[in-house]
Amino acid sequence: MIKINNIHKSYGEKNNQFEVLKGISLSIEEGDFVVLLGASGSGKSTLLNVVSGLEKPDSGEVFYNNENITVLSDKQLTEFRKKNIGFIFQQYYLLPNLNVEKNVKMGADLTNNKEYEKIIEAVGLKEKRLKYPHELSGGEQQRVCVARALAKKPAVLFLDEPTGALDEETGRLVLDYICSLQKKLNFTIIMVTHNANIADMAKTVIRMNSGRIVSTHQNQIQKSAYEIGW
Ligand SMILES: Nc1ncnc2c1ncn2[C@@H]1O[C@H](COP(=O)(O)OP(=O)(O)OP(=O)(O)O)[C@@H](O)[C@H]1O
Ligand SMILES: [Mg+2]
Image 1 (tube, rainbow, N blue to C red):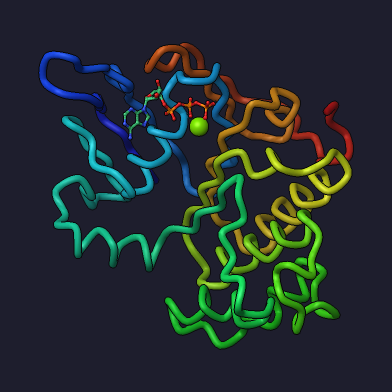
Image 2 (cartoon, rainbow, N blue to C red):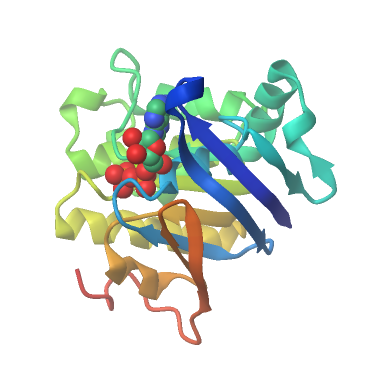
């Protein structure tokens, strides 16, 4: 379980500070599928970065089970992320001079997982495993990112606008892969999106506004990537 306790975070110089997170508290169950919605600038990415340990809050704590990650040193935090966290961004960030297999292997090597070929198969890229990123479509590249993030078997997968650069058809395809992999591997998903329709796929929907959580809602039924609007 992830527990977030009264997180505050500001950017800027002393006299010109802008408070992005204004006291965020939250609990996330293991295996949950959380979608985080909110207007541009409301602090979604900042919250994702703080919860995943990419950035430190100014005050407040983030607990994974009973471990307080906000007291870890940068080195310990990197180690923590390496072991426990997968990240998928809107942009693909693949290494251009490595083929699909090697990009995914890089993720797998972080935790010494030898079975990365299975995950390449699971995202439907077995035939393309020797292709380089520039030889792939946007959706295929994002699926490589999904495979790379999951190849190390993270406990929590963070996604920041994962379908932002994709057209509808490939967006649905990528989301469908992520969902079916979650059912198989049972990791926790925390996803930021602008597309309110995607919230229908979530178990838990959290809305943010101006650095605060304004609502938390549990869906009775979770729709599939092919049942939601777009
Ligand atoms: N590194 C930074 N330095 C200064 N200000 C920042 C930094 N990161 C974010 N901000 C500011 O904090 C606010 C919240 O940013 P954040 O990226 O968390 O919003 P968001 O909800 O993810 O928005 P979007 O939907 O547009 O991605 C914005 O006003 C932004 O300009
Ligand atoms: Mg953002």
